Image (cartoon, rainbow, N blue to C red; front, side, top):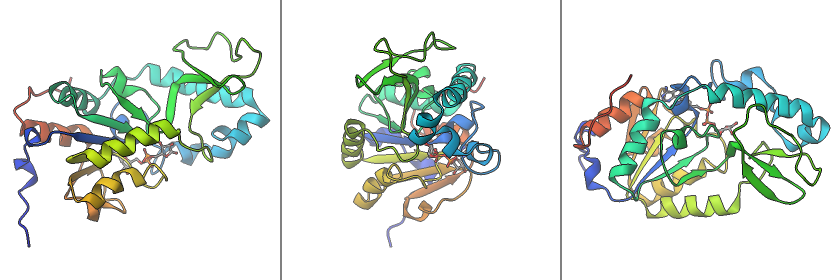
Length: 248
Ligand code: APR
C-alpha cells in the first residue's frame, strides 16, 4: 500500500493546475447561511415558493422580493479567510481555477478571477425574452423589467433549471486537467454540480476535501480535513511558502 504523506507536509508549490470546488460552507464564514443542515436556507424556505421557474411564473414579485432581500443581505457580507486565501493562491499560481456553486459573488469580491459560477449569480439579471444578461449591483433594482417590457429574472440556476452549457464545459475541462483538487464546504448532494469533482477523483489526482463533517464522497478523496474552511485552507497555505494571510 502506498504511504500517503501527512496532510501538513503537502506543498502546493508542487502542483501546477489547482482547482478549487466550493460550496456554501466557505461563505458560511462570511455570515451567509448554508442551504442544508442546521439553520440552512431550505429548512426555512420552500424552494417551490422562491427558487424555481414555476414560482417565478406564478408570482414574480414575491420571488423578486426574496432575491432582493438576499442581495441586500449578501451585499453587507465580506469575503471570509477562505475566499481570500484562494484568491492569494490564484495570484501566485494563475492557472488555478475556482468552480463554485455559490451565487454570492464572494470569490470575486476577494479578487479571484476566472470564477466559474455553476449556479449563476445573485448579481446578474437575465431577460428571458431577449436572452440577454447584465450584472447589476443596485439595491433595490431600479426596475424589475427589461427595456423590452419583459420581467427580468435573477440569472440563477434554480431548482429544475439546467446548468449553463458553457460554464459546465469550462468547469469540466478544468477538472479534467487539474493536478490537485481542493473541495471546500459542500454537502456534494446537488447534481449535476456534485459530479464535477468526481471527474477529478476518478482520475486519481491528489484531492483534498475540507468540510465540518464527512460527506458521502469523503472516502474518494486523498485527504479529508474536518473543520472550518478558513482554518484548514490557512494550514495548507502555511506549508507552501506563500505569504500567510491573517484573519482580521
Ligand atoms: N467550513 C467548512 N465547511 C462548512 C462550514 C465551514 N465553516 N460550514 C458549513 N460547512 C459545510 C457543511 O458541513 C455542508 O457539508 O458546508 C456544506 C454546505 O452544504 P449545503 O448547504 O448543501 O451547500 P452546497 O453544497 O453548496 O449546496 C449546493 O444546493 O440548493 C442548492 O443551489 C444551491 O449551490 C447550492 C447547492
